[in-house]
Image (cartoon, rainbow, N blue to C red):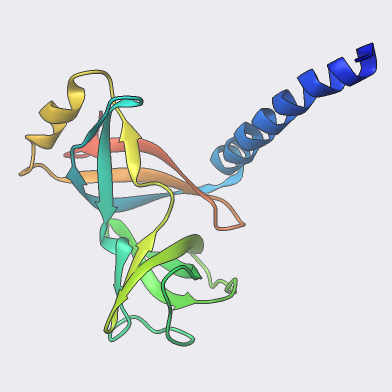
Amino acid sequence: MDRKQFLLIMVVPVVVILGFVGVKLYTVYAGEEILLKVAPVDPRDMFRGDYIALTYEISQISLATVPSDSAFSSGEVIYAVLSKKEKYWTVDFVSHTRPSLGENQVFMKGRVRAVHGQYVRVEWGIESYFVAEGEGPTIERMRNAELSVIVVVDNTGSSVLKQLLINDEPV
């Protein structure tokens, strides 16, 4: 193996990793912050440590009340147009294709995990929030507290979970 091949083998993984990080950094810096209401569950992963699994109100969409372009199937990509209603952002419309937006709207891109009648279960890629060792159970015990998250959404529908809030206070 010559020197060029060795350098190529060493550089390619670094470029790939920096690409993944760069996409998320772009979302954080160029995106719009939105506030979503959550309902937590506290698992523990022996490889990743304590984290809080988050389920959002926007993760279960009723096609009986939310307009859509057509029915969905499990595994499909879904785009949801959201707008701010009082405090939280909620779903206005869902579609199979990238939507056009009105004023004060953003869209998130997700994947349909299940369809049960008129209900569509969606995964947005922001369902885990990692916390310091031992903090997960403490946060989970705060079931009566109001939990929400600040999410940054960019113009491609990509989202990044920025901050967990308990009773509007950062964790």
